[in-house]
Image 1 (cartoon, one colour):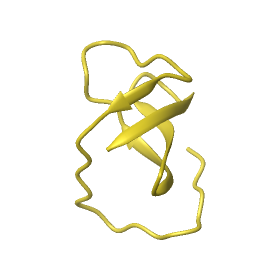
Image 2: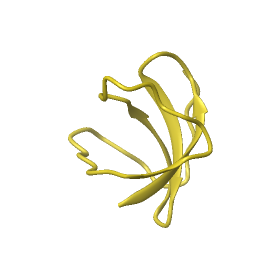
Image 3: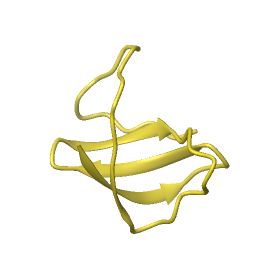
Image 4: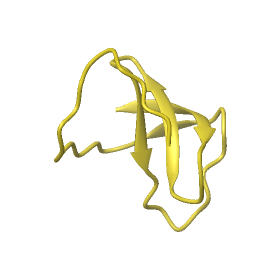
Length: 57
């Protein structure tokens, strides 16, 4: 899936947008994320999630 990073909340938590919507995710790479950059990623969802809600940490 292709995403664009829109915000870096801390060293490992980022916000992103994709063609499926937006979300908050754990950034696992050793390379720091670059905002407003497109990435091709694999997305694992192993937790509860809801459409249409935005959470702030």
